[in-house]
Length: 388
Image (cartoon, rainbow, N blue to C red; front, top):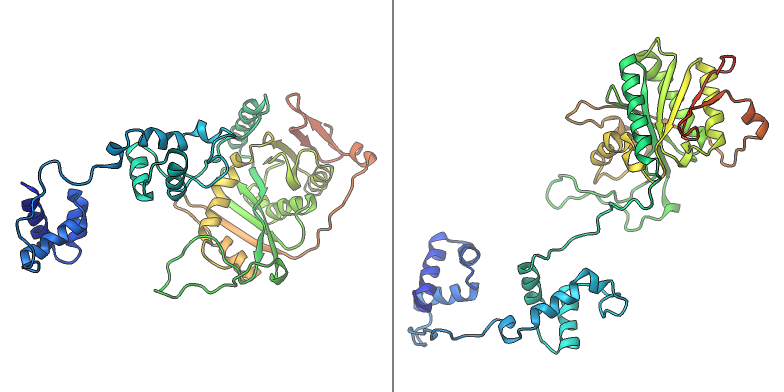
């Protein structure tokens, strides 16, 4: 088919399809929508004032930019090449890499006028795409990182074999409570979104919600204590104690040991004296030995509670303003997934002042038994009066 016949054929197909036919045919054939539109005008006789036979000679028409400027593609790829962008002398080192910026830079640097849409086409043809940075670099890893993970896995297997509780604990991200926008989208009637405040000013909030979670690995169940004051070691251990009183002691009535996996930092960090002193109080109160294993520094995202509990809580309340504490508790407590996750939540309005200290004398009174492998990360707190 010559140009005229192809134009008329494409136009007839678009007419047969009906509404949206031009876009469909243009997408399928690669023809310009304007070209198909002119064909429709020809077929309908709407261009009777112009000659019907309007066939471009072979090889006619505007040549592609990359043919007119053979160095266009190499120069463009040099601008977006990661090594070039990393060069402090690169013109685009400190600017946005949008197609408009690349178009302007092509003219400023190489004297080549090229539109932003052509830049986008050339990048796609050369296997470039829009991509966000990926958070995969963990930084300098501790030499015993893998060994500690294997140690924790052995602890999990041993606890499961003996029918003992093994819990993963951590504090979820703090949330402002009020009429504020919450990330994500939710199905709503058309044009009736949730109306929230324009600004998320902390002083306009009712308060902040501090969810401390306890995830039972074997039972695939979670418990979240929603605090309203401060995320302190006292709050962390109180939350674990609340889980034990409400769920743990009933689920494991004969257990005399409790295994805990926690992050290396935060309110349950391995350096915190208050954390260990509070665990001692918990061990004394319930006459249980508490085995603690901390994840290596910088590996908190591998904590099981993060991707087995907290992630599903975030999914459940996405797009929902957390206007009241009751809303927070109800959304957490109704979180589930296809794997059978069950979650309980409660509100804790008690005060947890910061700045508590544990003296050297108090530390010496703790009944702590450190393990041979990384005793700072792995230790057991026995009830006082029980030999270590």
